Length: 134
Image (cartoon, rainbow, N blue to C red; front, side, top):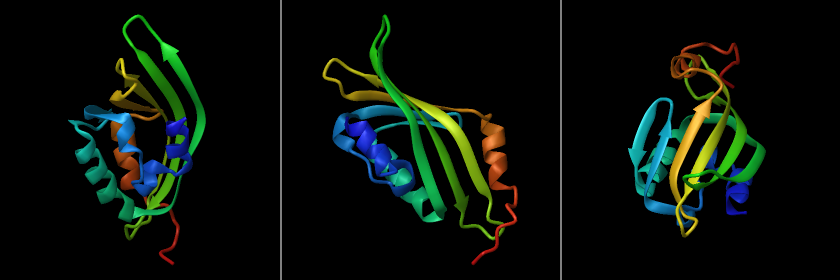
């Protein structure tokens, strides 16, 4: 499965993902932001990647599903990274992503949810980790 390979490549922390499996006008959302288009998603990832220090995203489980409205894939994962800021905050989030698929099995919606609120997630950015800058 291509999504599994993207997780093995740590796509969220490297910016390297298989854009061909997404519809061009795919909707991307998480608890803090929502936008449309794979080009914008790629650009956003590339802006974030330089701030990560010792990043990892581990895929816990990935499964296909069907409900009355759509085919989808559900992935659960754990993100852990320090940020390259003077106080070295540690970002640690358990989350899941629902990938809604169209009739051609292209991803039309990429929706993340996290085990912490958006405010708590943003708050991690402002919490010093105690890790030195070396």
